[in-house]
Length: 152
Image 1 (tube, rainbow, N blue to C red):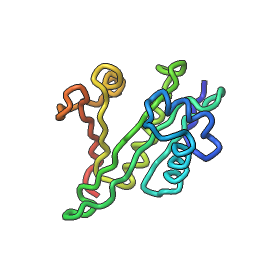
Image 2 (cartoon, helix red, strand yellow):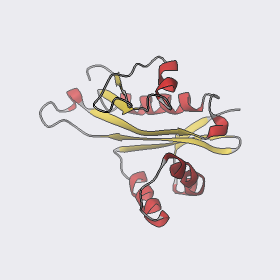
Image 3 (tube, rainbow, N blue to C red):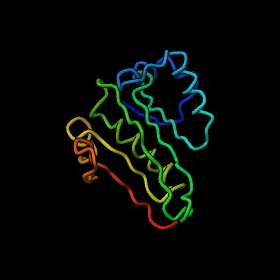
Image 4 (cartoon, rainbow, N blue to C red):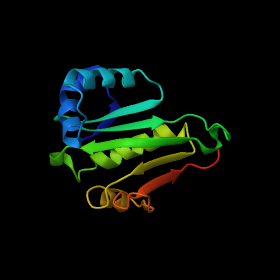
């Protein structure tokens, strides 16, 4: 099956909403969740990406550029990968790798570091299979992963 990664659009909401619910959403009603999604789509600091296969939306990723650092400008600029989700029926088919590659490409043109935390048992093994290594953080069950794109 072919996977294409592209920017999410407002039209993706009906297929995206079940994925967001599966990841876990706050107490906001669905209409407020959708309104936030639409606001973030228009925000250039965010990368909201869709993985699309022959059977529709198969996953998504959400990353945020935190902007220049107060003291060091872009020298230590960081983007955070907030979400990377693949539908259970499409896991281990390259969808997650395609999404992480796309987020990395987006971040590499903007920031020095891309960072994220991943649950030690549920998500970290995926990133480790791709060659990334998590470092301990204050929440020991969520190691921190960092990609360093080098000086800009």
